[in-house]
Image 1 (cartoon, rainbow, N blue to C red):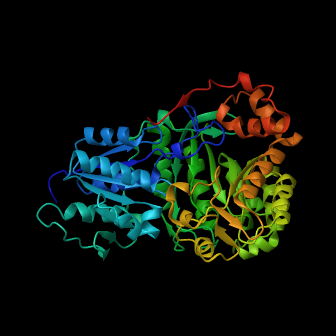
Image 2 (cartoon, one colour):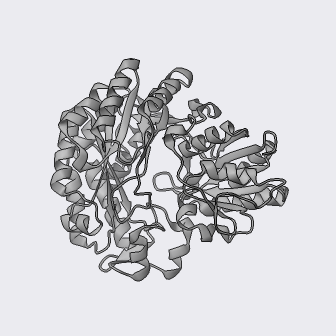
Image 3 (spheres, one colour):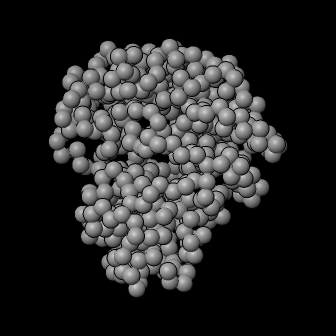
Length: 489
C-alpha cells in the first residue's frame, strides 16, 4: 500500500428528495443521525494506514456540486460514497463531477443499493468500484490494488469492478472514527429535552427475520459488549453526546447480551444520558423494558406495519396485532415513549385494510406514529412482487427503475389491485390527520411544549394534521423555535 493513501468518505444530502411538511425546504434545526457506517469504514481504513476525511452532505445540506467541491478540497486519491436507493443517482452525479475535475480519482460506491443492485451501479462509467456487503475490508483491498498492482484485488470480483469481501469479524474491528465529526451538528429529539446532541450506535449487524419489505443480511453478527460500552463512554466524555440511538435491527434478540449491556452501562453512571432502540413487538417483555428503563432508555420504536392480521401474515412480519397491543402497553406502562411505524399499500391492501390500520394506530398506546406508503426497494420480496404485479404493482412501468422516485412518502410509485397511488397518499395523510388530532396525542405534545420541548421539527406532524383538519396552525406553533430553512444549492 502507498504511504498514507488519501481517502474521503461522504454521503449526499438525501433530504433534498423529500418535501412533505415544508414544501421542499430543509429545516436548519432537524433530526439528523450520524453516518454511522461511514465512521466504521473510516476507523478501519485509518487502522490500515490511510489518511481519512469524512464529509457529510446531509448535515451540511450540500448540493452535489458543493459536495464534490468539498471532497476535492481534501485532494483525495480515493472517494467512497454510501447510498440508498433514492439517493444513489445523486452519488453517481457527485462521481461525475469528481471525474470531470480529476479524471484519475478513484470512485467507490457502497451501501444498501449497491449491495442489492451492483450491476445497476457498475454500469456508470464514472464509478470505478461497487462494493457489495461490508465495505471495510473492500476499501482496503481497493486501495491495495494501486498503483503498482492496479486491478489486482484479492477480494472476490463479481463482475469487473464489483467487489465483495467476506463479512468482517466485528470482534476485531477498531472503534468507529467519531473524532471525524462535529457532534454539535447532530441533533435528535429526546422526548422531554427536545433536540440534543446525539449519536447512533450499534452492537450488532443483521436481522434474522423475513419481512418481505426489508433487504438485509439474515445473518446476525455481534460486537463484544465491552467494546460497545467503550464506544458509548467515549462519545459521552469526548463528544458531549447525551442521547444515543441504538440502531440494531434486533437489540432485544438475546437476553444474555441485554443483561451484560445493562450491567456495564449502569457501572458508567452516565446520569444525564438517554437512549432509544428498535424492537420487535413479540420480543417486548416487561422485564426487558424495565431493564432498559432503569439504565436510561426513554423511547422504543417498533414496526407495527398494518392493522390487518391477514396482511401481517402475507408480508411475513411474524407478529400479530395482539402482540403489538401488548408491546405498546408494556412500554407505555414502564414510562417510556413508544414510537410505531405503519405502511399503507402492502400487497393486496384494500380500503378496508387501510382503514383497519388507521383505526389500529389510534387504539395503540403510542404518542408518535410514522406512516409511509409502501416503497418496494430492490432486493426485497415485495419488489419482485411489484415487478410481477402480484397484489402490488408500479403505477407506471418505468418507475420500477426510477430510483429518485423511491421515496417513502409524498409521491407513491405503486398501486394495489384496489387502490391507486392517489388513494394511497390520501389514506396516508388521513392516517396522519386522524392519529395526531386525537386528544390524547395533542395533549401529549402540548405537555412536551410546556415542559420546554420547543423543537419545531418534532411538532411538525402534529401541526400538519391540525392544519389539515382545522385549517390553521397549532395554537402554540408560533412560540416554537425559529423556522429557518436551508437549500442544497
